[in-house]
Image 1 (cartoon, helix red, strand yellow):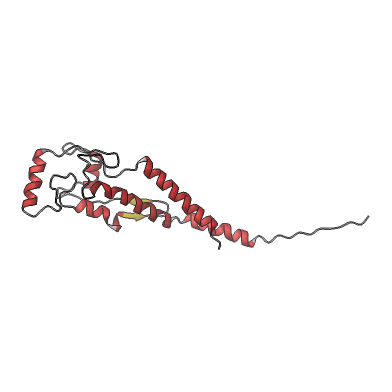
Image 2 (cartoon, rainbow, N blue to C red):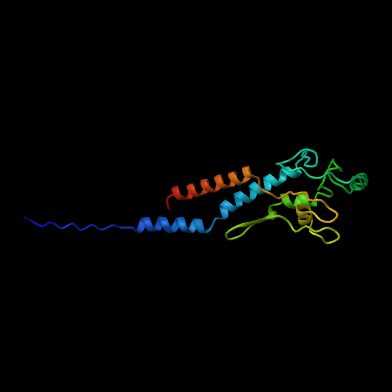
Length: 173
């Protein structure tokens, strides 16, 4: 009975190169983070969109407290003097439009190595942070959240992430 020998050699270079490429892409998720940042910005823009009135009808599930009459009178006066932008001086969170403009600017999305920051550090004439005071409320200003993610938003972000991972795992080197 003759003995036979089998010598199998496997060249794993291509497989290892594909794995290294995948790890590199997963380690640098900037393209995914840009997509997510733009999505969050688009959802936030709905709070400020023309015709959108979170103080009258819930927008994205949020209903804001109405403006005080003193604030409405002040804003109407500013509007008459041309110091107030837009057609709706009674609309909360839009006095000069600076906060809205900052949030819709590309500069409002800051991509980090492993995450992103969305927002602005816009300050009032008195030095308080507009975004924070409106998001959390204060002693004289009621909470009017503009930055939040709904369950639908989170599901959309999860689906986008899944699609991105699938796209990089099916791409050849």
